[in-house]
Amino acid sequence: MPTVKLNNGVEMPIEGFGVYQVSDFNECKQAVLDALDSGYRAIDTAQAYDNEEAVGAALKESNIARKDIFLTTKVWISNYSNAKASVEESMKKLGVDYLDLVLLHQPFADYYSAYRDLEDLYKEGKIRAIGVSNFYPDRLIDLVSNTDVVPAIDQVETHVFNQQVEAQKYMEKYNVQIESWGPFAEGRNDLFTNSVLTEIGKKYNKSAAQVALKYLTQRNVVIIPKSVHKERMQQNLDLYDFELSDEDMKNILALDTKKSLFMNHESPETAEMFMNWSKN
Ligand SMILES: NC(=O)c1ccc[n+]([C@@H]2O[C@H](COP(=O)([O-])OP(=O)(O)OC[C@H]3O[C@@H](n4cnc5c(N)ncnc54)[C@H](OP(=O)(O)O)[C@@H]3O)[C@@H](O)[C@H]2O)c1
Image (tube, rainbow, N blue to C red; front, side, top):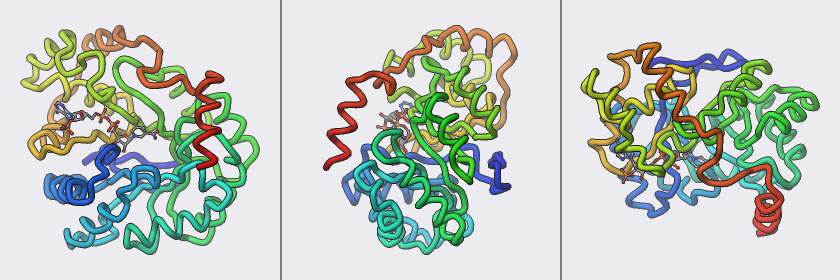
């Protein structure tokens, strides 16, 4: 598995396994066990997914050495006022005594105080890297300019229909690694049967899904696809024996609508929604 080197020298696999919307304990535990068995060594969870205990149970049962797993969680906005305690709680649920990466999940509420808590935990050696999620260039630049530790990662919605070319440029300018959430756009826009992706895939004997993921890793975007089906988990890992041509890359670039298929983080409605959630 290729790796990327973060701005503090820590290496992480370019591909991991995401567990959003797998909140049933047994289903999540089994999915993580299947993912580890398929070869994934990075897991992306979050306090808000309500499955840290299930992830922890799978890690324990797998018997894979802690140092061989790259474990990420995210602090939810309602915990920003006590981020430190919430991360300690996450570690307890996950059954670990350090985390590889902790992200602030959303750029709303008192994220400066939460980020400073993450900086403290980082300096204490409890977290190997810290970062953010859903921070678009305006907020990312502001944060980078007013904190000690430059975020190692910014995890944002990134897939063939919303490619984040502009955001990635700014992340690279500030030495922040881009990580994609929703690398399949959760299947929206009929991604899995898209004709451009399917036609390109035929040349390499790969599915549209594999082409969609390969496009991202070839642009140096970290990916964390989710599936609860082992055959798909394996398919989604089988990306490293082919390269998309320049022409393929150009044709896929043309699919970019530069718009979110989920929510616009810069709209007042979104801000109000998160303000309400931050109180829960
Ligand atoms: N930071 C954030 O705000 C944020 C937001 C969303 C997600 N995330 C993270 O990003 C991860 C990935 O995003 P996501 O879970 O939203 O969606 P996604 O990975 O884009 O798509 C998941 C969907 O694709 C299907 N699928 C997976 N592989 C497939 C294949 N080879 N062929 C056909 N269908 C396939 C899955 O179905 P089955 O499961 O039925 O196979 C599931 O319905 C999450 O799990 C989470 O860790 C972060």
